[in-house]
Image (cartoon, rainbow, N blue to C red; front, side, top):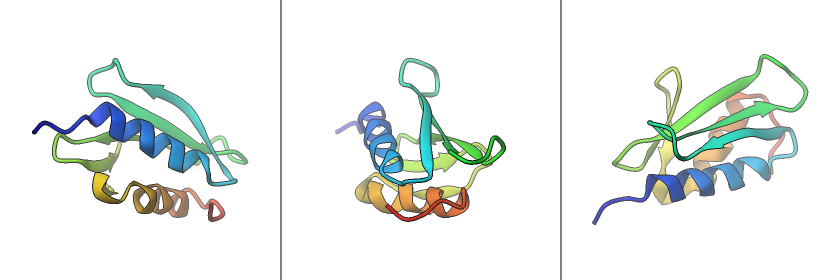
Length: 88
């Protein structure tokens, strides 16, 4: 069974958006690779682009593995921590 990475990224964006200090800048599901861009609402420089591998791992633009599609909420929380955001 093939993992639906677009659905995984939609779920990631939703969980990231629940953090008070994070804003989803864009969700590009038609691009190759599909990605979601998230930033700290209070900083123009604290931002990250996240992709989802075919195996279901959420990966930052600099190669850091945030977590997996098995626990999207934890992966989004790890990104929030990296971007100095308050908990959801």
